Image (cartoon, one colour):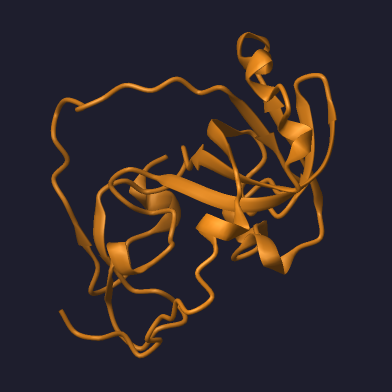
Length: 165
């Protein structure tokens, strides 16, 4: 998707991305959500109770063995319609520009996103989940179990005022 779709706001800066890639990847499926545009998407997965599905391509379905032993999963996905290369952004909620790596915006050099989702059920290669925040049809990169004992950081904080660099 072009940068025109999401727009570049005053004060934002773009990177000149390299002509070639450092690595390759394979999409392993698609995410199915009720949202058809960025403006319809919740800001994060905690802002919705929508039932969504993770559709895993047939070649990768064997990797779902024992997945129902998990109550929550980390879902990694490729925000294929996001602006690429944005380094400094002007979030609507902030009083000034912020560096991309201090934000969870989908606009970034590599538009990789993650959600921690609640696993509700499985039917073959389809997982029913709650907690996604992306556009319908978003490509799936990976699925990992969420372990509260190692993934949770209750002491983690973010200075909302944003410390200067």
